[in-house]
Amino acid sequence: MTIDEKTGRDLDHLLAGGDSIDGLYEELRSSFDAEKSAIGSEEQHKAFRDRWAGRKNGLLTHANEHWLKKAPRELKPRVGRLQNEAKKHVEAGLAEVKEKLGTSQEAKSSIDVTLPGPPRLLGAHHPLQLVFDEIEHIFHGLGYSIAEGPEIESYYYNFEALNFPADHPAVDEMDTLFLEDGSLLRTHTSPNQIRIMEANQPPLRYLVPGKVYRNDTADSTHSPMFHQVEGFAVDRDITFSDLKGTLDYFLRRFFGRDTRIRFRPSFFPFTEPSAEVDIYWEGRGFIEVLGCGMIDPSVFHHVGYDPEEHFGFAFGLGIDRFAMLKYDITDIQLLFQGDIRFLRQFR
Ligand code: PHE
Image (cartoon, rainbow, N blue to C red):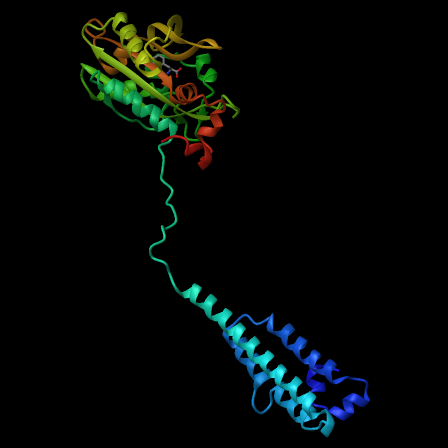
């Protein structure tokens, strides 16, 4: 029988059925306690109060009607005392729930304006940007201007004007990605030498950063997209010594004044003579960091400069590789994944 049923039955009937007076009141209180623990809102509390302490239909009133009033004379004092205790128990329980609800309600609605707000994430510069900014800063001091060029290039600017012979294996060697219309994703920033020389007259000193593309499989040292900086200078009296002096100065400022630098003869179709430059890296030996050379006379022909009158040098470097060396990054992919845990390290 539920407590609702029991409070609806007369005491003598219940006693005949085996209940005891103490047992009945005990049950009344423990039922109340069990329901009390589940009350979580103002509305529930109201219904709970009506159910137990409602003047007309509350369970306490029912107990009063059916148990106390129907108790035989000799038991009346005892039942009266138990009824009284039960009433106090219910009142105390109701007050307790009300207070608990009141305080949690208060906590919800009051905002402590003196508490610090949630911290805002500060942005950080991408390591590639940091490296380029530093390169730019160094060359800015040498009088270089910054320019940019298109990532979708023509065969002419990417190869032909740079003196790559038609069907030269270098076109394949550079793993060129062609578009359907015959244009291509530039494989290096060198086409900007042509674009800038076509549009300007010497003396010129330019630095051209940008994305370049090659059909390489991505791994920890390769990416089909990476970043280069092209640098070049054209004037009347530029010599290989200027090239060497410029790169020497640049690399020492970038990697440290004691950096050991090695120029190694090499070949590029658009420079003559050409060299690759290595720097000495503790634990790794000499590693290549850039390609360079004196601008080939045939390049000057393509842009309408007189090779008897003008001389120049050019160099190209990989920003990604510079960043990896400078920040000791062993996986190039980290530069492109946008993982905030990686990026936040660069401030
Ligand atoms: N463009 C060349 C490359 O991507 C680098 C280079 C630039 C070499 C300028 C010489 C002069 O490998």
